[in-house]
Image (cartoon, rainbow, N blue to C red; front, side):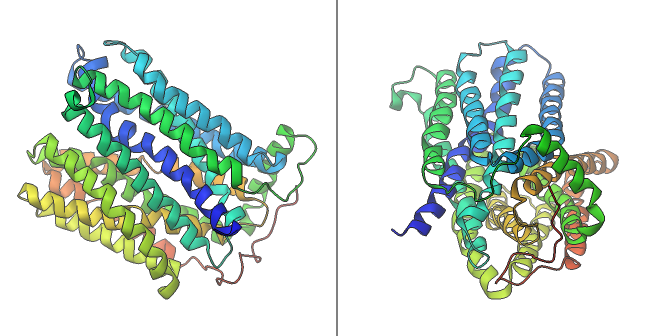
Amino acid sequence: MNEQRRNELSWAAYDWANSAFATTIMVGFFPVFFKQYWAKDMAAEESTFWLGAISSAYALVVAVVAPLLGSVADATDGHKKFLASQMLLGAAMSAGLFWVGAGQWQAAMIVYAIGAIGFALGNIFYDSLITRVSTPQTVDRVSTLGYGMGYLGGGLLFLINVVMVAKPALFGISDPVMAVRIAFLMVGAWWLIFSLPVFLFVPAGNTPAKNGGFFAGVKQLAETFSHIRRLKMVWLFLLAYFLYIDGVNTITKMAVDFGLSLGFAADKLMLALLVVQFVAVPATLLSSRLANRISPKKALFVALGMYSLATAYGYFIQHEWQFFVLAGMIGTAIGVVPALSRSLYSRLIPPGKSGEFYGFYGMFGRFAAVIGPILVGWVTLSLGNARLGILSVNVLLLAGALLLVFVKVPERDSFDESVPTVEG
């Protein structure tokens, strides 16, 4: 294996590592365990409120601090150090959920929120390292490799954990509750162990650290804001991304709830979630070939079109087997949209500003979890129809796609040298 390939795989291994938190904890067990174990004596409506509140709270924290930390990372050349700190934080909190006892819902929320902050902030520094392991010619392939490995790794551990909970005796575990608690420990260990390659093999930066450290980062951030008028394509892309990724996130997060509202069994919906994970692996990896053939921007339009079709298909679902078809449709696009968005964005940002600009990217991604759920909830409540609610997400997908039409993307042979740099 040559050095370049080793570096690419080492970088992508972090996606394999931290996706365990997203699948087993965020999407899989935490919401259910919160209601049935930590807040078992709380009314369902109240526990739902607190779940939503803690999710909004940690998202807001990340959105506010992400650009600043990205700027500081650029100023101090501390991307890998920042990533290590957030990885350790997230892994420790994942494992820490094992020790949160029944009825301790406040502690569960706090530990989960801190872990989620480590997950989200870590992704910002992880994303910014893509320019160290790729070239303009390979960035699409490398980005999709990361997401593909993430869905494979996260899906693999989640599959093991689901079997553990369904058949605890096969693993020598006393009951399903203990199986879930052990799954939290496994996520922490998985995240820690498989993160090691990114720290061992991803190259250090070439930009010398600036004097001033934190304050240099603050100054750099302020200067970037003052140059917003000169970064039109970056901000146009971020606005488009904000809209369509909100639609994507809404579909992903509310698909299971949508299935429940149609009366489908929870265990069948959990299997559908696994379908999404494993369909996403080949679809995401193959999308780089499509991007290479027709351009990343056009391939992104194809993936957004698949999401739009999925929402339309969801309107007509009547049977459980149709929900599995919907899961397959979502799986073909769920990794493609963020992977190609990440690589396309790398072509737009100024050289030497990856941490700072991926901080903004992360900020927009965090705030892009507001409009969609409210839109779906309002349409569903107003019209009394969950099908129309999920269909309304098309407004966000189409609005984002429309703005993306006007984003001018540089050719493959160079990152965008026309974007003005910000003197630091």
